[in-house]
Length: 105
Image (cartoon, helix red, strand yellow):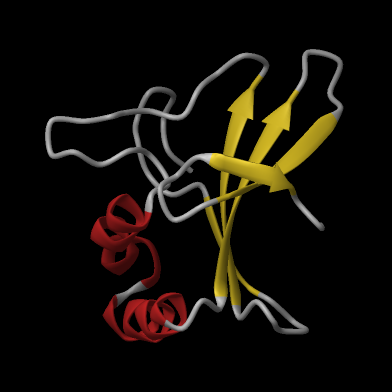
């Protein structure tokens, strides 16, 4: 787990019944927003931002597998929003880290 305010991938899951092969999640509380754009041009949860953090999150070998799956469109990124009352909503993110619709999970 990351301390509050530290940017990193919140969760990486191997999907038990692909596709997708993997699901990458970011959780935000209440009105919290995804970060960016950053000085390097990335946005939190865009494909480049994720790619830069995979090795430290899952290790080099698994990161290589995930990059292969990403290149083949077999990875989904999900934003999970937790409301003040504890309810959650999930949204599918595009390769640019922006919400593209509701999640199917």
